[in-house]
Each structure stands twice: as structure tokens, then as C-alpha cells.
Length: 105
Image (cartoon, rainbow, N blue to C red; front, side, top):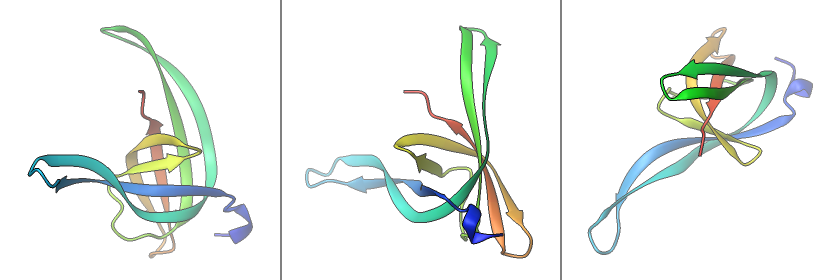
């Protein structure tokens, strides 16, 4: 993996639950790492579903290996949140490819 292609900065976040001072559980996203990545592909598709037409933006990132990334995590890129749909290792702990779908507000 050539470092000159890693021009994007992405942040990996994990869903956590903490308890505030009043004893109420608070569910938030906590950052677990910031990576330099290459944007391999970015596409938008339209799907017809039971509630009507909807668009999905798919982005594929390649980054150096980061241990512990799962489908339960999410990626923050350019201020937007993306759910990780697929994590594919590249080589033996050389890199990782993340297939992500934009979170709709």
C-alpha cells in the first residue's frame, strides 16, 4: 500500500454506553482511532423499498491495518457518518478495506 494514495482522513467510532451523574445510561459514539485512507470508490444507488424510493451512498476505503474494526463500528469522513457494512483484511495485517454506507439523518 503506497502512502501517497492515503489522502483522506477517516475516524473510526464505536458505540458505547455510559452512566451520567444522575445514574441514567447515555448511549454515544466514542472515537477509537483516526486513520489515513484511500477512497477507492464512491457510488450512489437508488432502491425501491416498501416505503418508496431511497438512495444509498456507498464508499469504499483502504487503510493500513487497524486491529479490532468490526461491522458494529462506523466511519466519520468529511463530517458525515457511514455504517461499516464489510471489513476485508488485505494481506497479513497489511491493510484493511472498509465498505461503508452513509447514515441517513
